[in-house]
Length: 181
Length: 326
Ligand code: SF4
Image (cartoon, rainbow over all chains, first blue to last red; front, side):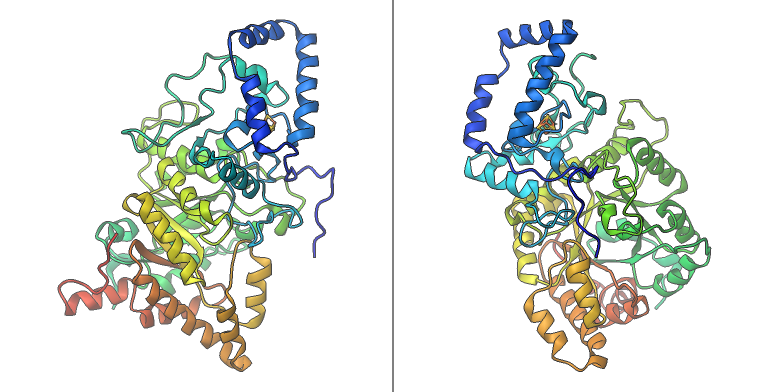
């Protein structure tokens, strides 16, 4: 029997959010993009040192609360604040087929699947519909960047999309995407 | 009972005609034997509409699914080329999809894939650059919009149909139908499921799919397979992620003497297929008979499904035997 991968293994480990979903949604309203934040974001991007400090702060906070791995394109608002990048397969569109009947992760059977946790939190807070959104592939160049700055700059607008409307198949690459950065 | 060229219509034609489709699983060899796929073809050609050519299944190295799909085509067996996100990033995935299009592979099937931790190279690097939903989405965009993920246009788009998988039995139960709905919104034409042993749970999932309108856009092909021995039962339960075997199935297998277990497993599989044909929206079955491929024709004949029985039915009744509601 293979032993379970230990901490320090290169694979992400499922993380159980330490902040209740309701509190996280409340916190989000505090951080919701507005003109002030947008100006702060562009200011930070012009000051590399400040940007680094700011990003370190974001990392410390979100790592403690959500196990954040700093992918730079935060999915938390659409996952009932459960970080999908802590899934060992880093799935952004829901759980794989390997979840055990008890809701445990295929790779770390002693831990809950992050998507089972996300579904639970979403159901209990009335945000279950968020999980039906199609999450676009990650831009891997954004690892280590501040997702808050990206969000305030409007770069997250096309991270996910709904499957509604006349077109049964939403476009993979958004036509009116954010400006190249 | 033999059909010319393994069935003129193929999987897509069978589904379009509303016939009950049958697919089976073929594992590429663990070496360079060019005849291995041909042997499976000789066995299965007349009995199935297509076969899944697996992609390093169980995270164990095998001949590539693209190469084995080409061998299957040459042997007159229609392939469904599996492609998993575990071993390739988005460049490699797209290039294999282009290759499959150029070689005339008629179906591709997108998987997230098992984690390498369980395979023969647990020290390997898991890629997972895309997830299964995103890979379906990328394939559909490639085919229908003629565009790579970069947005770059391609001149000659592929023509394959796009398959996906879902596990109706894994938690969260309330999300599994919706998860397939996402894959269908992303562009899946057909979906195969994990082994169905718990028919009641499967029916609940199907009801969810019908409610979401998924079965109108996507052919749902239920996974089935015979359990060969009590050891195989144990392995499926603990060694294969995501398989759920209810107590009554286990009791039935344990109630018979050891030399009768395999036959009981076949009986169970036949009965399961027969019950599945009656569920609205089930478009076919996918037979995974690891180590018992030789018995696939017997299973299909007894269950009365597949191209061989279809031609027979068609020659006796004008309507065919397996019309069903999709
Ligand atoms: S920024 Fe990425 S890694 Fe961090 S919490 Fe959000 S989704 Fe997870």
